[in-house]
Length: 300
Picture 1 (cartoon, helix red, strand yellow):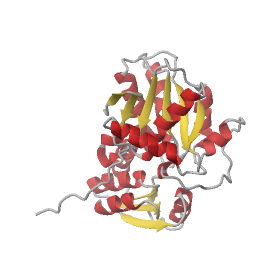
Picture 2 (cartoon, rainbow, N blue to C red; picture 1 turned 30 degrees about the vertical axis):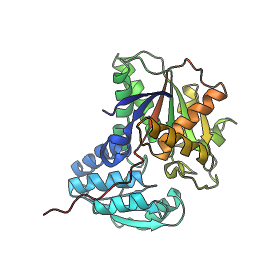
Picture 3 (spheres, rainbow, N blue to C red; picture 1 turned 90 degrees about the horizontal axis):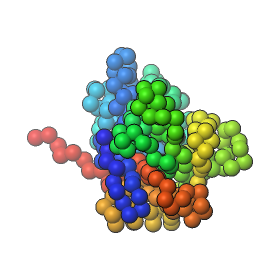
Picture 4 (tube, rainbow, N blue to C red; picture 1 turned 90 degrees about the vertical axis):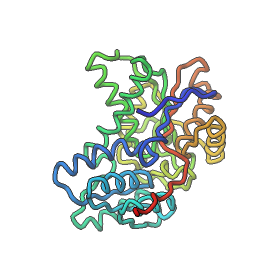
C-alpha cells in the first residue's frame, strides 16, 4: 500500500518507496512466486532497468536463477541486478534489441517479459485496488500515468472491472492519460489518427526516462483500447520538461524517477491545452524512485 501524497500540483501516488524502488516489484512479486510454485528454476527478462532489478530481487529471495538483458545505458540497474546475484547481459540499443538478444540465449530460461506470462499483470492490478481503497471507492476523474510497456495501465483497468463486479464501485471510470517521452512516443503517434496498433516500425529515440524508451510496445493494441474506452488520451513531453518535473517534485519532498516526473510534466501540459480542467480530480502516478540504489553491507 503506497501512499497518495498531497502536493501543490495535486495528489500523487508514490510507488518509489516499495521494494527495489519501482512499481515493477508489484508484478514480479506475484510472477516469481507463481514461477517457483510451478517448478520453474531459471527466469529471464528483457528490461530497461526496473523490471530486471525486480526480477533479480525476487529470484534471489526464492533461490531461483535470473538472467537480465538490458541496454547498456542503464548503469544504475545493472549494478542493482548484480547485487542481487543475477546474470546481466548488456545489449547496445533499446529494450526491443535486448529482447531480440534474449530470444537467442534462453538456454532453458523462462521468459518473464511483459505479457509473456499472466501473473505480472495480476500483481500490477493492485495499483487499481489501492487507488480505489485510498479514494473511498470513489475513483479519480482522471489518472495521468507514464507508459512504456503499459502493463500498469492494463492492470489498473482490469482492477476497476473486477471492483465493479464485486459491487465496490459503479461503472464510472477515470479518464486515463498515457504519458510518453517526445523522443519515443509510439502510443501518442497512434492515438491521434485512430490507429488500432502502434507503428511496427516506429523509430527509436533516446530519453532520460529510459523506462519510456519502448518504440514497439507488445501491448500497444490493448493500451490504445483502454485509452479510447476511458475517453482519455496520450501526451508526450520533452526531456527538459521531465527534468523540471523532477525538480518540482523534489522541492515537495518526492524524489521521483524521470518516468514518474513525466506525469507531472504531462499534467501541466494537459491543463494548458484544456484537456483536463483545473477543478478536475486528477491522480498523478510516480512509478519509481530517483534515488541511486546502494549495495547491502556484506554479511559478517
